[in-house]
Image 1 (cartoon, one colour):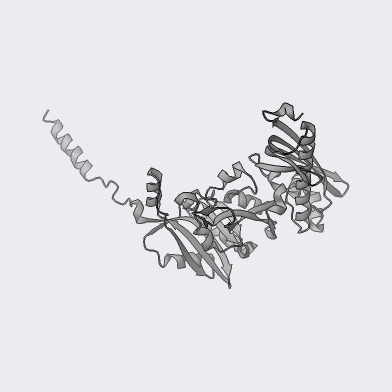
Image 2 (cartoon, rainbow, N blue to C red):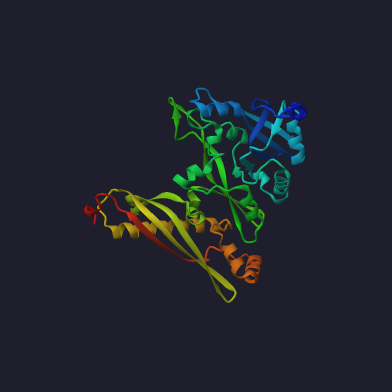
Length: 382
């Protein structure tokens, strides 16, 4: 037994000198950046950083929050983006963590090739900032966006800025885009980046009879061949959602001779773009298959009439979006990319001539709608 005593003493001594977690910081000792905004004005880059108190967020998860979580917004400026970040550090009071940045907001002046290269260099070289952050454009003041709060004193992390897919899955307008996909589209020949734009609206919701400002997707910037082609409103580009994602879900109003017949919910669209090459010319055909559920019916109408009216409404929406976009030399449905993948040589020739996608390029739109649910009173409508 005596021979085990020295071994026991050695083990106890070894445990006593282990370093442990002496250098671990408490959550309240770290400043967490959750969103990054970049602007360019007066020949200077301006960086905005949204900072949240994560200890308050943690308390909120354990019970109902009765007070608004404080939001801090930092501002730094400089001739280069790195100088602007350095300027932000000069007044930092504690350790600054960038590992929780989930959103990047860019103003329109930043959407030029040379300035975007600085954005890519800064965010991609960082060991903390993740590639999967959501990216947006805006025509609003970034400080206002970063201080806008959601419902019921919830954390800003539960807002459209940080969790856009929750809203998109329920009612789709413009598909959110993550930064890694943004870079791929930005650098891919023939591709068009559809960059959602944020704005603040007080039109829909009020709190205790006071209008409450909230973020909404107002439209999108279109970037092709690393050039900003311009901005279009949400109403003018409603057709792009049907070719953007299988997760799209939205309502469409059914009309006949300008009079509303009802509305249906369309979801799970599956699209195919056919490239039709003839000699040195090209045209495109879009085939779309989508599921549908009747939302409401305002007039007596048969199933066949409802289906036909829905097909016309969806076809018109896609065509109108295309016509409005091509007037601004914008390719909303990635048609040029489809041509590039099928015939790179012809794409290069037509692209140099500006004829890869024109207002006359869309030859046809074929829509198939599968009405899956007609309602409990369906026999009264047939």
